[in-house]
Image 1 (tube, rainbow, N blue to C red):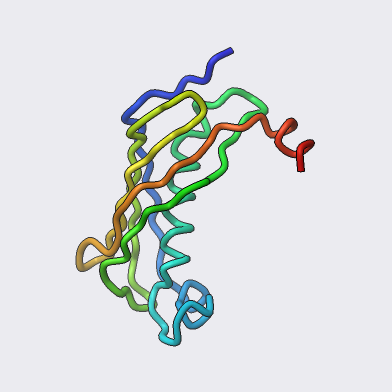
Image 2: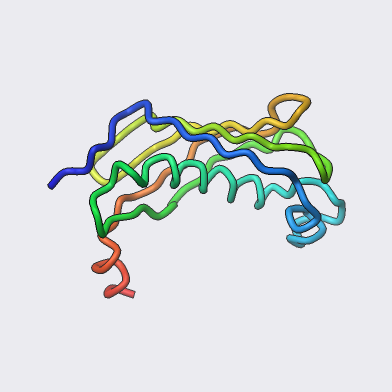
Length: 126
């Protein structure tokens, strides 16, 4: 049975930046602003959750590539909103465009690639 994915599926997640999301906490920097790894994780999660309902039972996706620009710092306490759009479906390969915004404007953008997996087969190969 084929998955029900179509180009144009959109995702959106909002979160507030906490001290656990900062560069100082991640170790990717020394200041308490939204860490690039935290932004990338939010982008991946947005892409992942946007398509879960379209996958057949027993299937999921794994992230394999990120091409992201972190454009601006966001302090603790500010809201971050991430948007994703499924741009391309090439067999099991899914390519998304992603953007993140805080209350002041765009803070990040780029692309994210995920692959559809059969979870059982994937775990057996590890």
